[in-house]
Length: 141
Image (cartoon, rainbow, N blue to C red; front, side, top):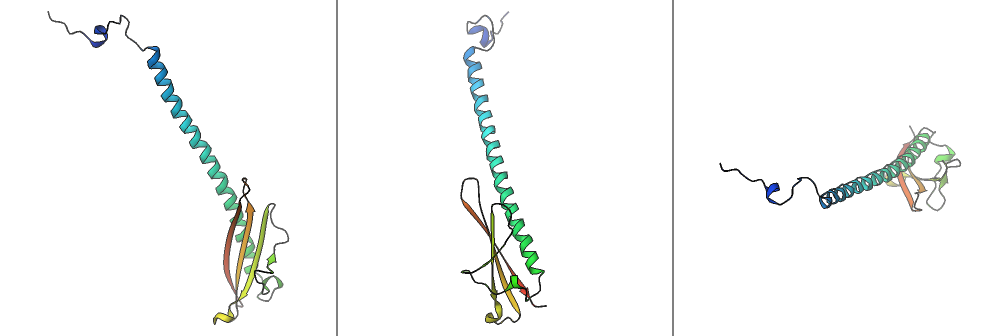
């Protein structure tokens, strides 16, 4: 009878199984995978933080812009103001600066309309200044 000899039996080992080297290699590969997942989680959390602050700042600006658009055409907050002397929000959210300029569009051939340009600024947690600008047109109707 001709019996086939397995590779494990022909290697000279009496007890087939994992060696310490094989276990260490497997643990190293597993550890590298866990580190990659941990880095991905940290990056995701930082991105969510950035998105939350950006969304909050933009929402504040949209709220202020809607308030201005609801005012009468000749309201003092919609008086013509250029970049050198902009209107300022007296009660902005903590950490935010909200300013707006109002330009007269009658010089462009449009009558009874004003362009409102609102700019919001804040600093992120690294100290970099972030800016969002919104534009709207207020007519006299």
